[in-house]
Amino acid sequence: MKAVQYVEIGRAPEVREIPIPEPKPGQVRLRITAAGLCHSDWFVMGLPQSVMGHALPMTLGHEAAGIVDKLGEGVTEFSVGDDVAVYGPWGCGACDECTRGRENYCPNAAKLGIRPPGLGAQGGMAEYMIVDSARHLVSLQGLDPVEFVSLTDAGLTPYHSIKHQLANLPAGSTAVVIGTGGLGHVGIQILRALTPATVIALDVNEEKLAHAREVGAHHVVLSNADAPAAIRALTGGVGADVVFDFVGAAPTLETARASVRIDGAIEVVGIGGGSVPVGYGTVPAGASVRAPFWGSRSELIEVLALARTGQLKVSVERFDIADAPTAYARLHDGSIVGRAVVVP
Picture 1 (tube, rainbow, N blue to C red):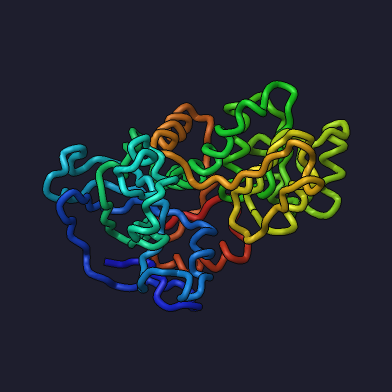
Picture 2 (picture 1 turned 135 degrees about the vertical axis):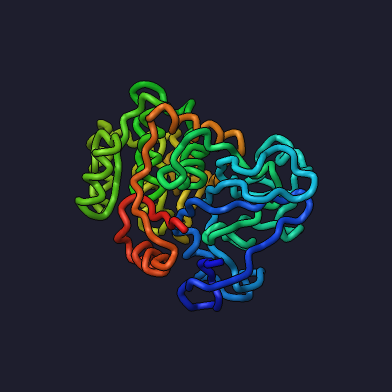
């Protein structure tokens, strides 16, 4: 079968022929119908070998959907032919967090060597994929896998972050979204669906800001050194109740710090390598900073349910599996608007 693999440290991913895997007891094999690309893939591919901690080659793709193709011994929860999405943050399955469906916060995964597909385990950017447990599958229930596969991360991650802040986003509040790409453009829609907050979107060019308006932002601001002043002006000098930074780089986090109100909150969702100093005098009084990770299985079910109502749409650019390396190059240089999806 064809698979998009990260083969060697420092080299771009490539399409390779590898054997079709066989499911072991408790596992499920999917025939992949769609797999999303993500900046997290580039983050992993940028790690040195000493930090990476897992073997290469590795099939990429932590956003995956497919049709159940073969069941390992003992699997009864799904049937061959079922159309499913993969819940990506795999945990031990036995701790308090995992038993509540919050495998994204499993305290045992790292020490047990359990890693998400495409981010350590073999992923879904291939013709077939092995899912380690039926509990990591969620029924699509009629959703188009190509259009909605990205919700397994690009929807689930902002949903988890926004849901945590719902009490801080009542009528009259303001939410700032920094970065309106793969996660951010879905985050804007989730904010509009779940809250009455005014949404201010920031990005680096007019094309991306126009897209942010199309998906529901009330105001758009160029992401530069003048952005905090613009946000203050739009909020009567008060600042934003919550800033969601879907970039996470040093400049955007400085914008977040300078834009949040007293007793507000900053959600550092992006993995751009920046940080926010927290202490007396470094952020407004009472302001909190949180670094959420992915989301729970029940939240993925909620995200897909929200999509079925028509309130979430993912802007998708489709690629054949042979063109996946080109798609990754375009993702890296910022020329993808929305989400890139590989269709084997």
